Figure 1 (cartoon, rainbow, N blue to C red):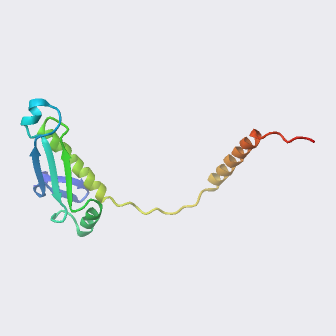
Figure 2 (tube, helix red, strand yellow):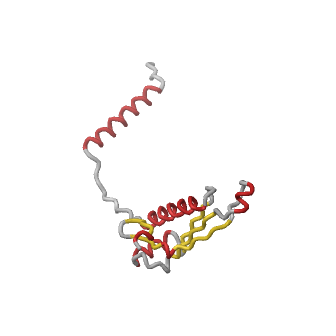
Figure 3 (tube, rainbow, N blue to C red):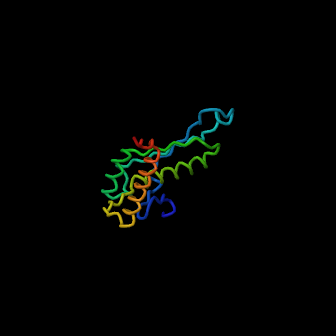
Length: 138
């Protein structure tokens, strides 16, 4: 059954059985092929009903994405290729929603950084001072 899962992140696998996939005719130009074939893919996943996430992960995804994650793809002429693209985007969006930013640790600038900053400020000041009119010797 592990082959039937979408691997999102380490420890997070979404069973394909939880995904709802719908196919429909793709809009736009393409002639008879676009009118006759159902190549547009709509992938839906109910976040609240999923058993694949821990409660903390579920809350994070609900806050960032909402109750249902929906991905629609109609870029290719092949239904199979559109489905693969939809699954890739699904995994990317879910991984981004699950990502936790590490808290920033405050640091002080080094002695060298302070010195470089002051030197560049002094150079800039001299450049601007040289643009002024010379003082008259009256």
